[in-house]
Length: 252
Image 1 (cartoon, rainbow, N blue to C red):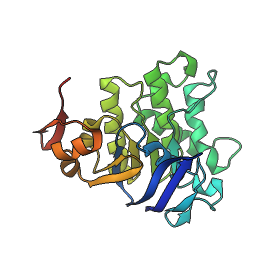
Image 2: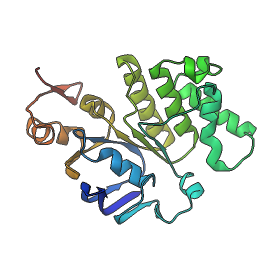
Image 3: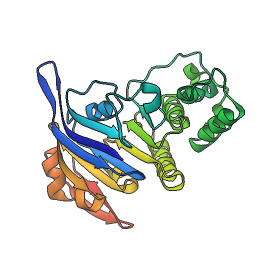
């Protein structure tokens, strides 16, 4: 379980998070939604110790993130940030292989290579394995980065807006792959999304944030209502149910 208790955070003098508490049980897909500046990415970065805790506590399977050695934390939790940069002369296979680094081997073992192959297959990268990163489209590069995080082999996978640069086809394919690794692999996927309909289609639980606070938390049916969406995003939307899932419609 990821346990977040009474976490507040400031950037210089600007408050970003206000006394946030949240428990995320193991297994399934949890989507964080909300307008820009809501604090979603900051919360994810604090869970992964990319930024130092200021107040409150966060633990992952009982490991305090602020005191656990980085290599130990990296064996239970992987994160893909929005701004991840990689060397352009890496091949896709090499990049995905970096996900095995926390396991402490100088060279990849046969087991590591099998895990890398499985990660590339999971995210439709097998045919691109020998391509240099600099030759990929933005969407292909994004999928390679997600595969790298997946290859880390952790129980918890944190993804900050992974649908950036993906077209409709690959956005759908990536979300289906993440749903698959949660269902078949028992992993916990925590994902920041701006597309609330993707969140509804694929997440078990949606946590809505606004102004550094959690303002709603529940199933897609709980969250995707006209009143709730207006409270989060500031304008009213129509909600229709399609194949048992609520979807938001709005007019320009």
